[in-house]
Amino acid sequence: MKEYEIVVGLEVHAELNTNSKIYCSCNNEFGLEVNTQCCPICMGMPGTLPTLNEKVVEKAVKMGHALNCSINRICKQDRKNYFYPDLPKAYQISQFDVPLCENGYVDVLVDGEEKRIGVTRIHIEEDAGKLLHSNNFDGSLVDFNRCGVPLIEIVSEPDIRSSSEAKAYLDAIRAILQYLDISDCKMQEGSIRCDVNVSIMEKGTNKFGTRVEMKNVNSFSAVVRAIEYEANRQIEVLNNGGEITQETRRWDDAQGKNILLRSKEDAHDYRYFPEPDLLTIVLEEDYVSELKSQITELPNKKIVRFVRDFGLSQIDAITIVDSIEKCKLFEDTVSENKCSPKSIANWILGDISKFMNDSKLQISETKLTSQKLAELIELIESGKISNAAGKKVFDILLNEDKSAMEIVKEKGLMQISDENELEKIVNEVMSNNEKSITDYKNGKTNALGFLTGQCMKATKGQGNPAKLKELILKYIDEH
Ligand SMILES: [Zn+2]
Image (cartoon, rainbow, N blue to C red; front, side):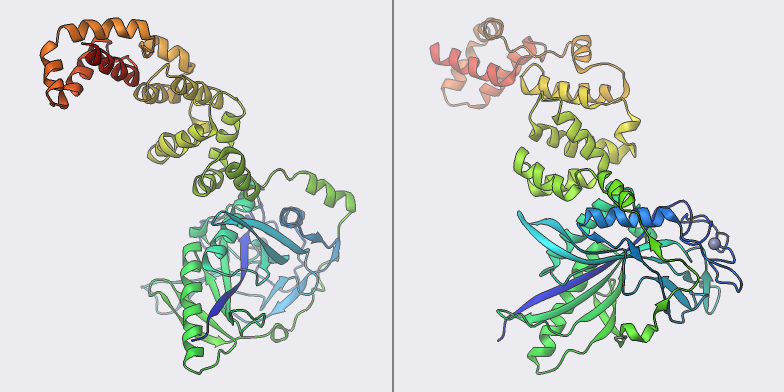
């Protein structure tokens, strides 16, 4: 049996979070009443002319910089002609042969290894409307609100070799889009959609097989399933002596399989031509480099750094970086230089994440700050307060304008770690519990739990448990 390798290329369509649409001043907002956010321009009425929204170019160029692309300072827009009921103009304004950005790459972490995935191009285009279906109506309805919503399409090179690499690439793209405030990336609202190209090639060769495209796969986990299904389907076809044909298939995530939609169209089928109603885009060099200077450390780089410098696991680093707010809290708390980054990560992924999920609040909506968190963790790490006391302090920190130390003092939560002080207490408790000591010596090991409990009680719950246990065993040994 021949062995095959999976080859995947991804086209990500991301809706930009500009205030207005790409060629008119209509609101670019999701979820408003159908057909209320459109005008003669975005509906392509005769006699109207589009005007390019500068913010669209700005966001696309920023993404280009983030993905290490070269920026085409002179480029044009083109008409892609096709009919569909949600496209009133019967063409979409896109970019054909000269995209705004091209020849880039992104580095992602896959199973602890950095992998570079090429980015062929990023171009700007407009979205189409949306077909709606209702049980009360025997046909399709169309909502034009989404017509003219700005999109960027990010096309990868066929560098992806597994479904987990595809997932890592998509996670990186999504995180960058969010960090740079380019897209809100709400999958459930369709602001990120993905076309998946899959082929297989024989292991040890460099000859790509015929690729099959699956359009509009609407979640990243569905992309993973779609890739695995399609690769297996192609392997089976080849193993049975068949041939792969270039075609478009529709991924049905609920059924976990895809079905043939049509044999694949080629670019020339769309009769692209330069959009005559729009001027050539000309970007000044200063403008392009100014946008580059606005880009700070990107999330994919942060993940690598957190694993390398702070010893976080890959999954923990990804989970923290995935949320801009958690990542900021992590980095700010680390920079306080009071406690170990690993403990900070554990707090953020544990109690803080739980609080955010339960309360539906962001950290910025509470009284917790990086200074307070650093101080709290320092108190625990140094043994001044117990873990349990730490959790009590944390609950108060969220709601009150006090420092961790102030709360500890106020509530009397300071842990007794002073050996002399603890020893005095242990000696007294033990001399009153001679029977339990004898029991313990006779093999009743649970007597130790009882003795520890008595000592803890005598410290009003503030004894350092590890030290108490140590002193109790020492006492038993000596008596
Ligand atoms: Zn409009």
